[in-house]
Image (tube, rainbow, N blue to C red; front, side):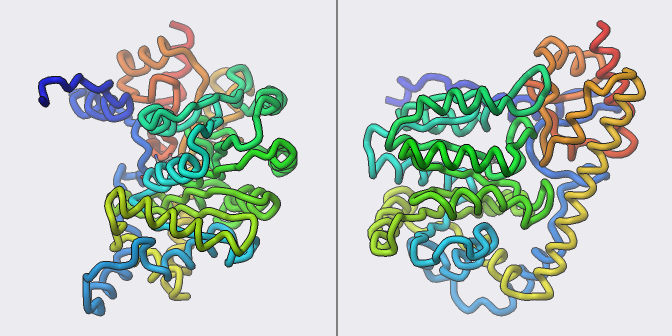
Length: 395
Ligand code: PMP
């Protein structure tokens, strides 16, 4: 029967990584896959993670199953990290999942379990895996306008216009911070207007927060999520620990579901546990245990926060250097948005042909929609990229 299988479309970002690897040119620059890299091009294990792993290795007495929802200490620590006490704890059900991807998938599944014909609105563009998961599940996906190609910033009025079409019981997917793939984010006033609109429409926000600490800091990056979650009756939040703890392969994430009343939480939690049981039973534990160990130990936590802050300010410095270099070379402020974007990505807003020229003529690899991973740069390669952009523009 397996002969009936058809080829699946290749994942564009993963194919780009393979093409980069195969490129023999020495001066090549990889701005593709969404993994943080330091100035040496390395994705390091964070110091606090190493230390937490050493403690777990020394102290862990059993590897028997955890609960279906994972280790409660992980859930509590993450609820606190993301929501910071802004929502009553007894209204929050939480489910450990394999990564933020697992949290997104289980969030969509939970919404569909509650409403079999649920529709999910998403920014155009969004992280492509949101769309492919929804398509695979057969859930209707509705785009809302988000990115203004001209300014490379958010087209907020366009977004609000599209969101007028939202109906009661729809889910509206938002990025908590550091929008992927654009890097363009809503202001706090805009978040307030979106929150008011969704409340008026009776829609449920679902917030995907995968880069807390990569934009303006751990607290600032959680502000939008907290502002929304504390004001709406119901909300889903999919949090990933892959980037901010650098534990990509450990597959560590948490789905939070906020119910309107504390009396609903048990049923919501039971349904979430049921979803884990049907999919993989118990969620992975190692990464979750590392995260809980770090967040619950003041010394480890301080060290983790300090290292994360270095990562964040390093990326900001690269943004500023690139924007300044492009301003110098073009004599315009047309690329000033790069310094205003936040997180690991910026969408340049240039044509696929130009992206191809950058790849063919300059060995610079970015995703076809002109998303570049800022962490793929360092102080030496920023001027190389800036010159290549200017040349490719002229070609
Ligand atoms: N959401 C967004 C917006 C992302 O960019 C990512 C990672 N690329 C994820 C979720 C999921 O990350 P992971 O499953 O690796 O935790």
